[in-house]
Length: 67
Image (cartoon, rainbow, N blue to C red; front, side):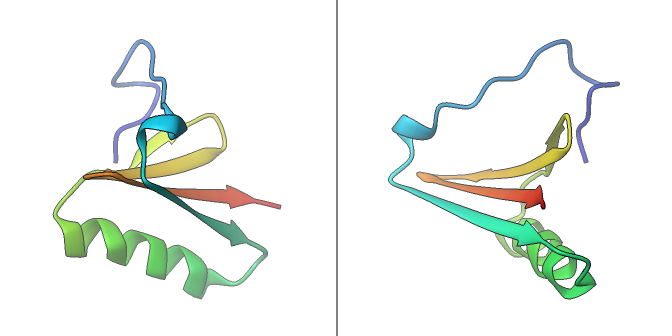
């Protein structure tokens, strides 16, 4: 997990991604487990920016937001 304590600034360009997949957390922890499982599956990082989490992979941007 990379969060605000590690970096100075982060920006994402959703227009560069072929696909943007948004997960919405509504008190169901299985959504969080599934989201983190994607990072493990793709061997990549989870980036936290404010209250949102991102997994960048190739041309896909996965995003987890809370409602």
